[in-house]
Length: 155
Image (cartoon, rainbow, N blue to C red; front, side, top):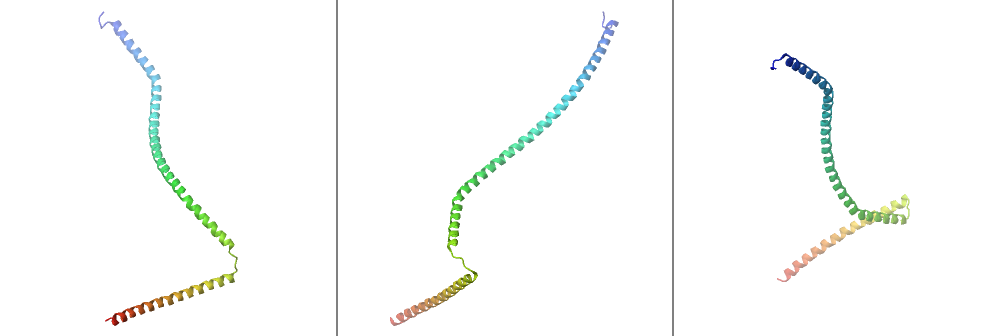
């Protein structure tokens, strides 16, 4: 039995044909699965890319959150620091409201008269200031003249 025997040639030919037929049917069945696997691989790649983007966004948001937390802590401490001052201002406002409530109500004529009296007092105060300034200048001049007279008499 040599390698060229007709039986062997037929058997090898049938074997090769049978192998091609089996390969074709297996390829046919596998082709759909391979296609599905390729689609799944594409989807997994897309999901991986999205996941990377989400992680980057999450990291950025966490950094921003830390900044906001720091700002919030600063703001909280400032508010705590200012609360006593605001409370003091409110107390002063209440005192002023109380004083205003005790002041008698006045009509327009009384208010106008009070204003004119205040203006008159201010005018007289200004005149007194001018007179006192004049007196101070006069006294300064007298002092200098006395110094000159004393220095001239002492010679």
